[in-house]
Image (cartoon, rainbow, N blue to C red; front, side, top):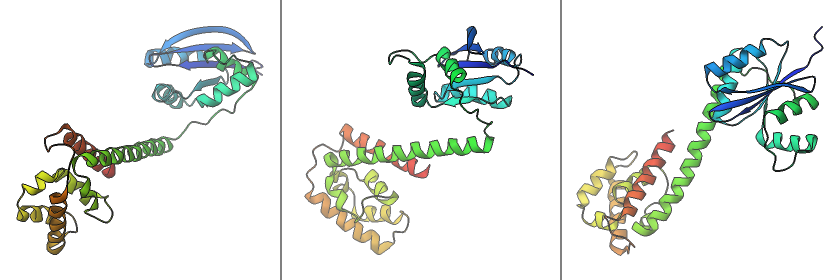
Length: 250
């Protein structure tokens, strides 16, 4: 029966990881590895020398993700600590000073003195679901950010256009603003061309296109923009709309 309890505390950074090995609460080795197959295989060699090694590291975003994938590939269980939770536990349980660096030694001490439950290897399907969720959250954040940027830009270029539709949102509205970001552009365009453009949008027929065109021209005639039609703010507005359309599609 193996009575030894071996803990591998791993402090993951962008280019390398520091490893601290503790056996029954005593530090026996520490070293640095590169975050690539060479470094991970060096770590694996030590892990294979131990019966049921306990591995602990912080979830540091994309940097720890490669280590996690390597451990999953070799079906090695581990503790992946939330950074805030790790700092709280090491401070409370190990009397760590607030300014101390949370390194491999502290992580190894934490698992030696206050063992955390080892996680099971995550399935590839679960990891893909998590990745898709992160992408969705980022797209949602980008959508909100660019909507706010668009609103601010419109206040300078053509604020009256926000009254064109009952709800100034959606692909058709953004497409109209993208085509007519400034009242001068509206007034320089033939009414027939405006109507043809509008009829090309989803769900807009001839009568609806004519009504929107009349409203757009009326708003353009009373508009008093703060910038000219060739202003850099127009480019910023178009960038925001293209980002919105991309995020919506995503």
